[in-house]
Length: 352
Image (cartoon, rainbow, N blue to C red; front, side, top):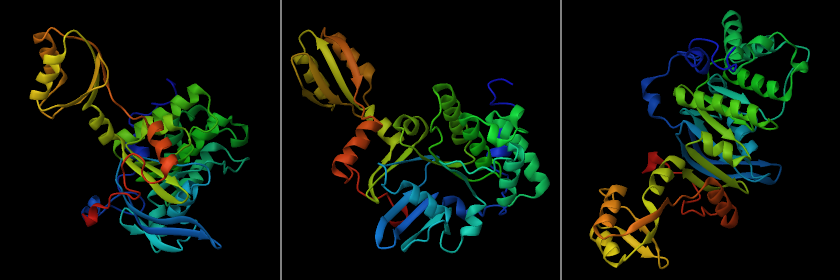
């Protein structure tokens, strides 16, 4: 097998999502629904509040869930899965209320838990088949999908081995296989690269990206590794003390960042910066040789080099300004109120 990933002709067509799913075909009207809609969701254990009035919508193909230990990330996932009842408010997944539609929701969700939940003396293929049956697939179809899922994640040759003999990396892949075997529309991944060595981590990231890019399943990825989230996700939700500290659309941030430039120049730049101003670009001189500017929509980098040539100025260095996910996360931890200029709740498009 070549890298253990693409062993069947089109694995995502048959594994990542079923044509109609065990719950039947989707109604066209539901296509406009957000993936997850948080409607004042609160959860408390005893008298201790864990999640506090979470509101907003998530629609991305891959959604990253971040926060310090004890922030409420796992509680949020477990509540969406139906393990914990909301103390107030609710949430909707593909338009279904988690309070009264849990059975239907579970047929459309795959869950890869952080902790192992295997039956040690069972072979991997029979365990994945069992999970497919519990998700609503008929026995024969469940076995077929189990084989396909295990070949897809790279465990095809080891699928008849007992799970208790698996290495840590193989167990993580087995957990991913059981999460996708029934063709869910939404997959919860809780620390999918936890404990993996670099090659195994890269393999897992590639699998997550393949599922994301197939367009057939949405992903909610919870991880304490910012690099994993940044490499896989389009939307970021940061939780602190049970509240939404930051919501960030990484794709929009990346597009916006391409408008902010830092230049280092050599030569007489007085006329050069005046010419930049005539293009409608805002700029600021930060030192004798450096300046920062914001490009307008109808201005690109070629125009800057053209102006530099006309005014005999050398552009020695050009950098795009970019806040990394680490920057965004650290700012959120500092003030907890959307430290990068975002409100402490998600956009609710249905109310705009």
